[in-house]
Amino acid sequence: MTPPPGPPARVRPQTRRPRYRPGPTSDPGRRPRPGPTRTGHARLPPVYPEGNAAQTLIMPVQETSVAQPDQQPRKPRGGRNLPAAIGVGVGLGAVIVASLFVVKAVFLAVVAAAVVVGIWELTSRLAERKDIHVPLPPLLIGGVAMLVTGYFAGAQWAAALLGLTGVALMIARMSTPPENYLRDITAGVFTAFYVPFLATFVALMLAADDGAWRILIFLVVTICSDTGAYAVGYKFGKNKLAPTISPGKTREGLAGGIGLSMLAGALLMQYVIDDGTWWQGLILGGCAAVTATLGDLAESMIKRDLGIKDMGTLLPGHGGIMDRLDSLLPTAPVVWFLLTAFVGG
Image (cartoon, rainbow, N blue to C red):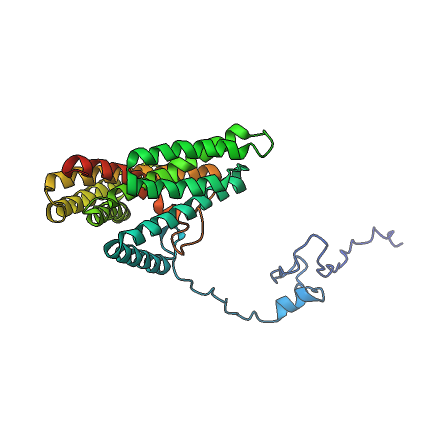
């Protein structure tokens, strides 16, 4: 008699792992590492999708050279065109020297032309940026009249014409509606004082017997102030002079400008002006450097208030006429006063 059959032996079925297919969230570029499975079978190679991903995996990567941008010439500090600035500066210097030492009236005409352009630049920027409209004809006529009268008649008549120009501005503005009347008149009187009246002191220096040499001292000490401040500030400047007004100016640059201006003033007063001495030149040069710096800062305040970088574009590399007169205008009355006090009118 045969025993009953026992339970059948359990046979572990052989299962085949599914082939790898990248899902929507899997990385098609990631290859699984081959190796034995738990069943002892080699892992089948994955199936990659067709298209750009497969081509990226199969095709060798070709190195492409990245095009380098053209090397642009480095701009000088302040974004100025240095060659143009030097060329314009040399040209202006030649015109000034030629007119100054040939015929005084020609130099006076050059100053008058600069005043006319400066008035136009300032009033144009006021109208564009602040909607301030100043009557232009009274300013132009009064400004030229101040220069001519100051040269031929003296400072008191030039001051009287400044007052008459203010009255003419008040009358001329009455032809338009009264809105912003006080604002426009105030801006007009400021312009009359800032540009033509301060420039009148250049005409007063020119009227002296040695007027050409006085103008030369005035120009040289002012230029030396700017040059010394730039050179020393560029090389050694660390402490800002007025960062909220002109971030590029430093205390070291101010000291360098004062030193160079004092040196130039001492030499010119000693060897150019009759009865002048070197210590007088030191005082003149130091005062001129301070007023030139303050005038530059005042012009920067005006341009920051207007939201502009330059007053104009007439002079390539420099800006406008007013961008060159910023340090000269406040320095003119100081140099005139000191020369008159030291050696007479």
